[in-house]
Length: 381
Ligand SMILES: Cc1cc2nc3c(=O)[nH]c(=O)nc-3n(C[C@H](O)[C@H](O)[C@H](O)COP(=O)(O)OP(=O)(O)OC[C@H]3O[C@@H](n4cnc5c(N)ncnc54)[C@H](O)[C@@H]3O)c2cc1C
Image 1 (cartoon, rainbow, N blue to C red):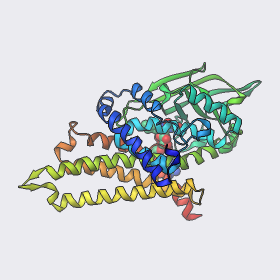
Image 2: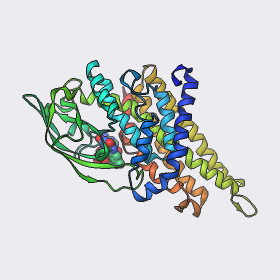
Image 3: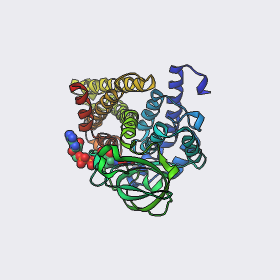
Image 4: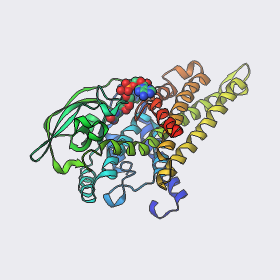
């Protein structure tokens, strides 16, 4: 039904669909999963069943065929429900993108048939102990063997690692060639030689899982080399130009939910015989927060438009949206606590969780310092 609607109506329909799921299924369980640090397996099965996964995957491969404007609207609603739950779905999109961007047509058909039919959630395996911002410093290797490659290495902070059905792994096929020596591989999670070393215990987004993973002599058939040898770095950058929009939108949704909650609370909190919103100290804060929420959304829509219409400055706009929206989300969620005083700090309300969840968006998929490096490069030409 969504396919037959005009662009604006389509975006509204996508937004409404994700909001409905978020309000009905995510919001009621987010506190429990945050407290327990537990992964919501049943919820994810329901999300797949409801068509919330595979947003950017074209319908011809069995996906939802959403534009990036629609994907951003979807991610905002996931973030408004729970960024920790939403990131699992967004990370699956992250793992699918290199296949969409770099694989041959036939390879796309084969891999997505497998992903969709078997409902395989993806993990994007790039970061290593010695290669975070500095991706060129990857130590993992994929050495040619007669029938394909042998993968060895260690990956760190891998979202969805232990619950995934496939890993999209970056490794050096030409170790001396820096960024041009990086290739990508589709690796089924049950391939012999893959070991989950540990699960990260962390501050926020606690419903999501992150793992350190070891690959020891993992056999990879030649047909699981995604795209061409040496194209991994370029494809990772093209992927991030798109998926950073999802992180920005996830942060925006989280910030919006914190604002809604704090503003509603402040309207009803009476001190000195009047609502606390009657003080400019509070109402100005809420006014600034609300303005920054709208500004974030416009930057996100600007970046999504550039991708959807293949216009110039895709990397620039995407980095601007990611840095601005996630930095503002951090401040907005912190101010939401301040607006609520002691109540905001209490776990009886969701805003302290929202502040903890906001922090991570400034770090993953390239820290905000790295976003400013990208923006600066555009300025200096
Ligand atoms: C919870 C979580 C989930 C994650 N999920 C994934 C995932 O699914 N897949 C994956 O591959 N990775 C994932 N990551 C890794 C994430 O992308 C990296 O943590 C991030 O890119 C930063 O790398 P780093 O932590 O090694 O920091 P470092 O690169 O060590 O940076 C440390 C500090 O130095 C700054 N810095 C570094 N270089 C520069 C520079 N040139 N200019 C200015 N400042 C600089 C950084 O901004 C940062 O503040 C995840 C991380 C976390 C914490």
